[in-house]
Amino acid sequence: MSNAFKRFNFDDKMLNAIDRINFTHPTLIQERVIPKILKGGNVVAQSETGSGKSHAFLLPLIYKIDERKDCPQTVILAPTRELARQLHNMTLELLELYPEIRAAAFIGGTDMNRDEQKAGRTPHIVIGTPSRVKDLMQSGALDLHLADRVVIDEADLMIDLGFLEEIDQITRALGDGVRLLVFSATIPEALRIFLRKYIGEVETIIIDTPKNKASIHYSLVPLRGEEKKKKVLDIVQHVTPYIGLIFANSRERADELFDYLNSAGVNAGLFHGGLKPRERTKEIKKIRALEYEWVVASDLAARGLDIDGASHVINYDIPKEIEFFTHRVGRVGRGQYEGTAITLYTPDEEHLINLIENKGYVFQHEDFKRGEFVSIKSRTQRSSRKRKETSLESKLSHRVKRPGKVKPGYKKKMKEEMNALKRNERRKYSMKNRKKR
Image 1 (cartoon, helix red, strand yellow):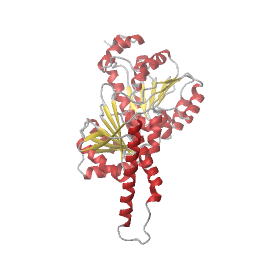
Image 2 (cartoon, helix red, strand yellow):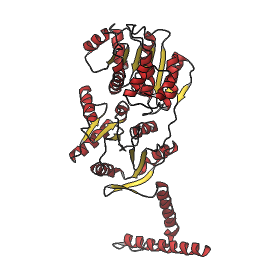
Image 3 (spheres, helix red, strand yellow):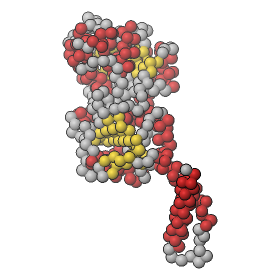
Image 4 (spheres, helix red, strand yellow):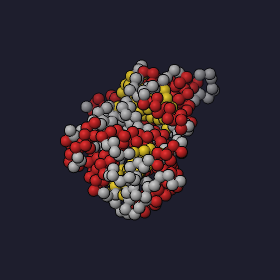
């Protein structure tokens, strides 16, 4: 039995349910969030992907359901259809020992009449996307006025996708005693305004995970812009992942890379917000069935796609918002697994690498040659050497004179003369240092 979870005063049925999903010890966010939810308070928690936040709210919320009450008691809102389905599946897994508790998922892109029929069976736990839940409320099919707990998952992504108005409408329709449980990777200003409106001042539980996780190898590979596709192809043709994710900054970039890899015979899938609902559902089934080795994805879609056991991430593009870098690399090295996060960058992306390093990430400077990663000098050493070369060339330039009468090959001769002068200068510098010793 899960002794480590006994500290929350769960009964044997819940402890057995936790055992069935092979949880042995609570994560940091579970340690801090579960007691607050059990006490009935509002919760605002900031944590990154892979921290165990989903079960931080699912476990206590299921435990607090009163199956004797024939009404929805908990509403869980997710920003994407994929995440809503995933939360529904996690809930059903826990409810195997709670056959008397009903849970239902209401997701956009599915048949509205069928959802109205599901709503008529009065689920205790409602899980869904904000737009579909709001539509069912407005049609009268879903009565949520007795629900007293609302989870807003991935709240910052909710704002990015424009769901704040729907969440506002749903929250206003519930009773005065409703408790809000808000989980987000970041707390943007628009979210702060929403929180002040509904719950006032409340302590934000911040789970600071170390930027460089010991279970992840962070590789930084320098390139010229036109080499990126070729380098990705070289890597995916030689590296065999459990499943690997390749991130692009836009749907167009993802489509372009996907077409390039497929034309080269790579077994790759594609996942982004531009796919139709049926296509997305079909792709997710294939991804989970491990039909692909690699999946090319965009950021917004990937935030709602959780793949257990992903082993490799390739940043084909560096995200303009550094938070997305954290979400991407957080897909690997989870639980007991190890992972590799590969970031390709061009000279014009140096400033983005600086921002990432300022956040606390430490890279291994590498190149991928002949089927393996090899260590190279760090980018600071390389740029320092370039600066020295430029400085030395500037110092010696007056000694290399352009001929008065230009003849074929004069540029080559001037370059050779400059290189000879530079070699001579380095020799002098080396001799001078030896004498000092």
